[in-house]
Length: 295
Ligand code: NAD
Image 1 (tube, rainbow, N blue to C red):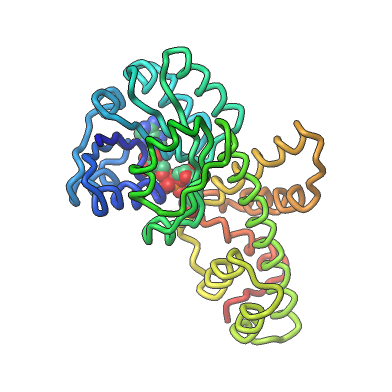
Image 2 (spheres, helix red, strand yellow; image 1 turned 90 degrees about the vertical axis):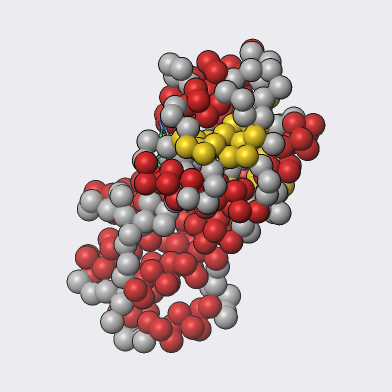
């Protein structure tokens, strides 16, 4: 198949490179960041000059972009995907998008006879590199079945959730739970080290006890190293949690843990940590208490 890939950053980059490395699909790439494009063309992908260029002739066009407004601009904007895509081609959004935006873009595509899948992913940059990420997909089952050979080239862990938008809802639920776990980890680690515990021993205990989680694993590694460069930027995590809370509002579902975690993220952003890793929520506690988890 011919694959057009738009947005090859922290997540799109490894997913795109895995398609190149692990399949015979021909991949063409577009990103505003030339260095990001080069990481894919070095392995055999072709660099496209524009969204129009990457869209025309591809069987499947995929996006992995930061914000819903970015996906909107790239799909529905001037000379975007919609303006250049034709019958028989499929559009797949791998971004964590707003369910309402997924539906808006899906309706615009459908009006032109184009099928769309929402296929957000989870597992972080480590999972994206290792091709083990969960890909949760919404959209027509036949379109999903036809797209499987491309999706499975960057992870075997592909789940069809239901109609268009359901992949995105699953992703927002998952991420809300992961961020709440990370916020609990920040509180727990600060309590333990303030009481005088060795952070490494505390992390060793929790890792094999009932307080453990996937979020704790990556969060505690960051807490011990003090590293802040983004694997998953706080600004993106804040966006995801905002979207989950918006959905809760819409459906009348109370989300007290999600709301308090969102406020914690807001404090960390207020301290200037938006572009840093989402684990920077720990800095709120560390600066308030004048001590770090890292010794
Ligand atoms: P990123 O900022 O690292 O990458 C986004 C890429 O999109 C960048 O290379 C940027 O140059 C490119 N881009 C932005 N606007 C563009 C445009 N108009 N045209 C072409 N390229 C454009 O972000 P990321 O961490 O890779 O996240 C991408 C999506 O995946 C987000 O929706 C995020 O919420 C989601 N996600 C991220 C992670 C993670 O761990 N980083 C995990 C799961 C899901």
